[in-house]
Amino acid sequence: MAWSKLKQHLESFLCPALYGRVEYRATGYRYLPDKAGLCYIAVDKKNVFNMSDTTTLIRWYQTELDIKNDSDIQIPINNEEIEAVRKDTKGIVPEDRLKVIARNRKISEYAKELLSAQSSLSKSNFVVVATKFLSISIEESLESNDILLNILALVDRRVGKKRILNMTEKMKLKHPIVQYFYELRLSTL
Image 1 (cartoon, rainbow, N blue to C red):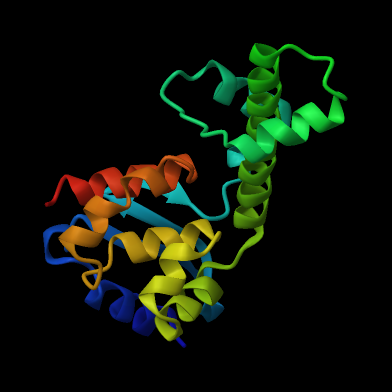
Image 2 (image 1 turned 135 degrees about the vertical axis):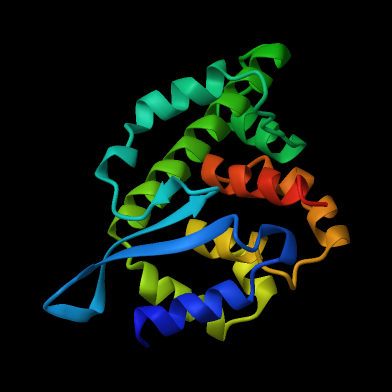
């Protein structure tokens, strides 16, 4: 599908409040008219999300430290995770430390997921993901681990006010750019 047609399809699914504010842009090459160069999403004429930006890659360790130091990020820990730590440490660790160890393990996993999502995103092809978005259900896009599918679904008119409001807890564990688009959509309600 040509870029202009794909862009037209994507913009037809934008929620009315974001129409004109959210734009899908791509640089084109004169000798490759059917191929998009750099693709990005602009909000209010400002480039907020570049699919080919190599500067978005961050180190896993730094991400882990950022998550640990950010008091706004709530990482829920359940009893199964605490029991797993207790089993690994053979019961010699005090109760209060078990929670800390379980939380640190979960933060480490979360940081690794963020890094893998970002590195795969920088390699992804916007056109391929956008075409996939147009062919799958909105529920699949929202539940996906693909950052771009999440963003396209959040700005979609098929996602109603009630569903947006019910996603608050789920969005806390998503990538910061997905959270940005979630906040943008919340502001339109």
